[in-house]
Image (cartoon, rainbow, N blue to C red):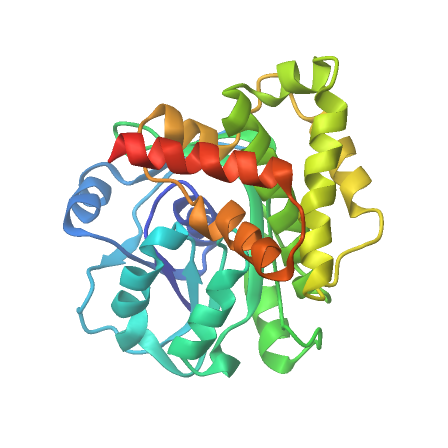
Length: 305
């Protein structure tokens, strides 16, 4: 399969790199500066699962390359509009667009921009970053991505994609219930990023504070109440499961949103916490914790300018 990865950053670069390392036909759609960086130094991955330096194919937006079989999107949601414009020439009738973005609102954007049949579901769990030299640094045991048809069916195309995604040094797995998995991930990342940015702290000190466990659980319950109000297919006990997950994380684990704030970068406040808070307001659902967290993020954005 011909695979196009949009960007070669901490997420797309990692998963695309592992596919290239396996021997799949991978091309990276990158900007001029990143293209030169890759040409000069290669795509460098430093990981607890194995280091590698690769020399992948790259193109810049607008270059002739024809339609691809799969396009992997892993941009931040605030860069989504630009990314959609850049991939338009490479989307054919049978192209699968696989988003690895946080949240869920991007699904509607993708389906309204392209043929809805082009879009499949996806998400990832990984802690990785891009250092000053452009090296991808991946530090956690978890380096997993999921994908699947929104219908849950094992179609011919999704099985072909599963074959291409298998056998790498990371875990890219087919899911028969990708919608549920995406909502579960959305709840977790919204709660985890919300509490760590509010407290300006890794998860360890928060969960060990006297009221920390109660705070984390109540935040997940608020998020769950909003999701259930719009019919999201989440498990009855998903809030408790997410609390257990936070208790299993390393003491110094930070959310990617928290790390972005520490660097003074853009954050996905409107796409994650804001999207759910707006729904809560429309439906008259009380979400005091979510309100405080969203306000905190908007203050940061205002101060950042």
